[in-house]
Image (cartoon, rainbow, N blue to C red):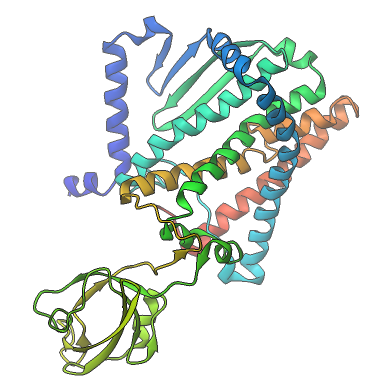
Length: 400
């Protein structure tokens, strides 16, 4: 029973991994090399970050200035997009339930329970954070705002990156300069996600997570469903069906999506006319079905079909990523995009809160400013919290 508990609770593995990391940090005496070690966290600060950022800026000053100005505009766009998504998704729950998208907070071992997904998450997050905080830092350097330290922190299985500008210089900087610095982090994440999407767009599997209007621009309609393998001794093998054949019809019934197979009723011993696409040619192959192992009356072709349809990119170019590389890039894209967008929500711990505060400060009294920010935070938190809560109501405890 205890072994079963261990093998079915990935949070145990996360905690074990953290104990190993904590012990290794202590044994290696990392606290003598700029690390702060606590039972629940590992923090590293570097006071030479400013030098690194200055060197980068000396080679990219013109591009950085364009990026900094763009960040202010995109800051408003991303904030609006995040609000629109949360509000429209909340509306869908009551008006159009089938279109409601479940949301969850990604926590390794809690909501991320697949070992492979935890690995992709842990590999992707540091990259996303370096890009985010690096953008803050380089734009601050452009705006002549001193960076005191930069670094990262690990809280068991949660990551945080940071650059610490000189607070006095930041407060004294022009409002536009501060908005540039604040918006730079989220903007860098979203732009980076577009680069990753550019790599993924030529892989048909990426079509499955794209909304229909955008999907139609980049992909042709799926040809059918590919065959992953053919069962030895089956009717499919005897008829000559092959791995990677794309089935697009059975007995005249169109097969476009995997669920279309359920519409085809075959009896044991029937001869099914299977239409496949092989090397660009359409073939019609008669297959004598064999009895199902669960129901002798039911006929089986003897194939293992793919779980995904065969979307094809409009541009005749295909990148054959291995499944592991594709999933890593997919996680990198997902985290970059959604961390960027939702980081611009006006909440106290997010860049969006600082962005709004910077815009309205000094235009109203301190009392009105405080009341306005509390009201904005409350509305945002209610929208975000309701999306999470209603996701749990619809689908229970969401894990991936």
